[in-house]
Image (cartoon, rainbow, N blue to C red; front, side, top):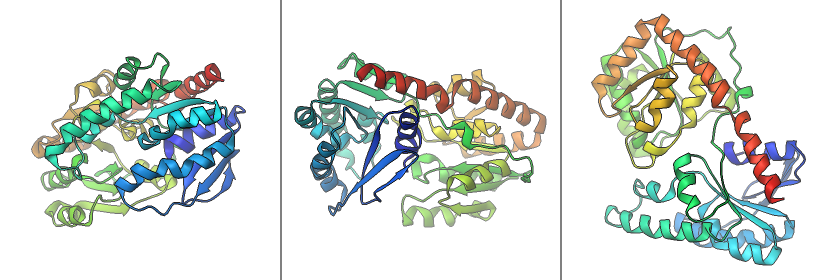
Length: 353
């Protein structure tokens, strides 16, 4: 049920008449919203083994579908791209969800001394494979421009939210002091700094998501600011909407890593589409989104005092916060919705078909 793969791309393609099949591992074979889901049993455990062997296990299932277009979403599936093309004669699309070479530089599970070397190797490998497929889709202009040096057929399909899923129910009571963060709870997402900031401001944090590790969860929960946290854990889509509507500010203070500085976090757009002002990291790439649209403020994500000050300021200045929320809501619906992107996806498919 991946947000980008199933909820957006598969459903959008099926809606306009493409015979759409989604291949998954260890899931359930069923049909949802005219998307046929086929599951393949997969018994290889561990990240490295998955990278090396998952593609081969999916190959026979993929060939049996007899598709005209194969859309690969995982970098490890690039290993089978050329062979899949030879065996089927089909068109192959590679969908790059993030800047993989830069993302590798931030992977904590890769020894620090090896990250730069692995990043360079992945860059060369990914670019070579991109030159061998029929088209590339990615999520930002920067990543698309990189792939254009290897493949002339590149399409930007940003990962904006499906706005029709967010209903602004005025009956939900807002807590005057409530702010929110919804998403993965990793050290580089600024969660620790956010909880530390609660010690220095008059706010309550609605926090939803899964911690990256038990050790990090225990570290954050020991902080004094945790007493001001309402922790929901992992929640489904309808509960996410409820949390947004209970809150007054959306927080997206990611650390200045190589990959985050050039990303477009979907949570920022979800905050905007729910009418929340945002407090965001002061990344250059994000300034047009936040400052030009006048929908929030920007801070140094590592500066706990600055973050606390901006939280207090927005909570106390309700008129300013409401105006920012309205500006964000307007911008999200005009510029940053999935509805603006599915047309690009469909046109790209039609050009290949």
